Length: 360
Image 1 (cartoon, rainbow, N blue to C red):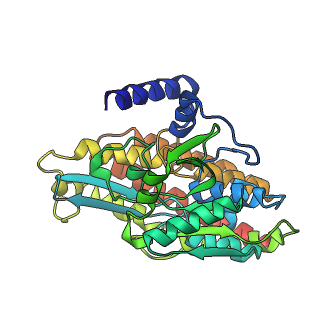
Image 2: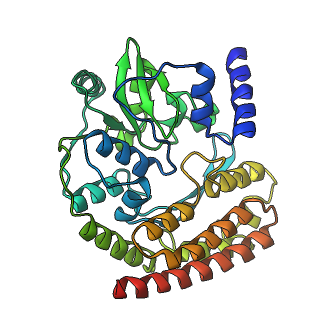
Image 3: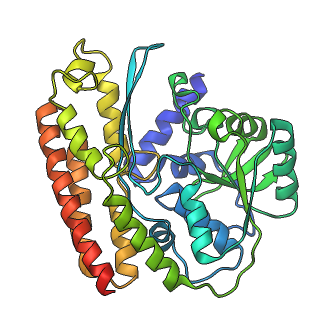
């Protein structure tokens, strides 16, 4: 335990010095040797970055993380305040990408829109472990959804055991270790037993995996981009106050509502759990310190620039800055006002995007 704490401190110090992600800094400090045949590209969004790595390894060209992000429906919106009685904690879950509440759905959209074949697999723990071994032995990369606490390298507290995780790509094995691509730029390995346990932890998607069964060939990217753009507009124009832009408006009201059961003045009346909730907000919106890429508005701006709609990109970069500013706030009233401004800004920007898509 002491060694883990020392390593964590060294990783944090390197992050502060270099600006690297946790996984990248960890891999540099642990000194893993590179594995031939796999290119570590880094990335921002776990789903799009992982799929980009797999498709590139399969010989598909002309793609990028930002392009796949947009094809999958790009940005989303969503807010949930969780209250856990077992440790009296509160966590804020924010959805910043399309279909964020459905594990694997975005990846399916991208593959379907590009016309790329993939094989999904899900089974009991032993069969799932045997399947992973057989695929890695065959030289195939496998996308997995491990629980972040059990996979180990995020060094999370036990209170987050079973809270879920994002996709990673297993691309090679060496003895009892498995090489993972989790947007790291230096090799990262985990103990196979830890990985198997992590993949089996969350009931909703336990032991789920994906292998690309297609090989490199020309893709109809233009039609896929059009479908992705229409998806962005439709998704963010929906009326849902949980899974679309009205979620920001609802959250804004909850910051100062003294009567609603989920109003922050009610939830945090005893003062407990507020620091954790505010920290989870900051980690959720800020890609520099969070785990899943932050608010993802800069990546969406990059997508727009890549497809010829660069005139819209500055507006989304401005919105990204507004999200970063919100992550630094501690006053309920200030956060409420900023969220109301973000709702108006994003609603206006989506209208501009919808008009551009009609002309495009």
